[in-house]
Length: 424
Ligand SMILES: [Zn+2]
Image (cartoon, rainbow, N blue to C red; front, side, top):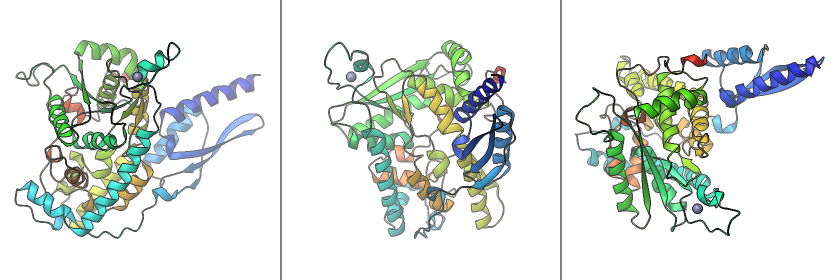
């Protein structure tokens, strides 16, 4: 009896670890030995390094077992493919004319081929995440038993900061959503912190302005679609209440200021009361895979070695991001959005796209000799430009936590959040 209870408790704890932590990286085998549950064979999907060792340690502490790595699994989609591309963004001249640069780049045969591959993969990924959607929206679902319903409401929303990542998703989703259905674009703004920028009106935050600009581009390219921009305004008081009673539990076990900011931004966006959609497309993973963070630029700038050493330095930053995707983008964001009855779908984090992008060299995805807003995630910007986005493709966009004004730039994003601390 007691043994049964112990096993159940361990299984429950294991479930928490699996659902909360980074275990998409692992497969494991449970076994019973003399009636005692053992988690003794672990198959790791990534090379054994300091980060993976820490994950294993966390697992042992929570589950109360000692695990060992049995083997390293290398599924085909994680292996680097041999690509035929040998272009190098750093070899192209730049004379302060962004349009000329972009035109020149997209006409290069190798880059053109790379963009065509990206187009095929990303379109497929969005198609799969848009077409496989339940036929009833949130409202019609609740009225299901009362009458026969044909739903013409929006079933897909895009959590929309107005940047290149989510605008590309909106444009691609347009190809697969029935023509008579609206597509919701949900934009979130937080009440400005006093002293941040007093000239800003309360909700006139950078992401609000960018989203209005990007919607206009979408309307210009697809005038027949009803693009329903939904604006969510969050007061500091509301943020404080929801964070302390609800959101912090969803973010757990992550605890940094960055986790708090992103978790809250996604929670309030997916909580939009006027939204009927039950599926949310998010641009998650684009910065990590294409090289869109300042950290990537800094890795290039701060490395004083040879060209190839500088590229290695960018590559190692990209590798760090890649390792964090299961815990951050796929776990935290998923829990936060699911709490509002929406399914988060991330078209950029898809196995074929990941394999393609991780097979490219850093200098084939981003170029930090070009300015900010031009060279970061350059391949994705070129793609956006190619499919018709003009203003958005050249937007120097703040990360969502700064653009929505939830976070303060003076804070250290990787520091422990005071609001999440009590969970420990
Ligand atoms: Zn409906």
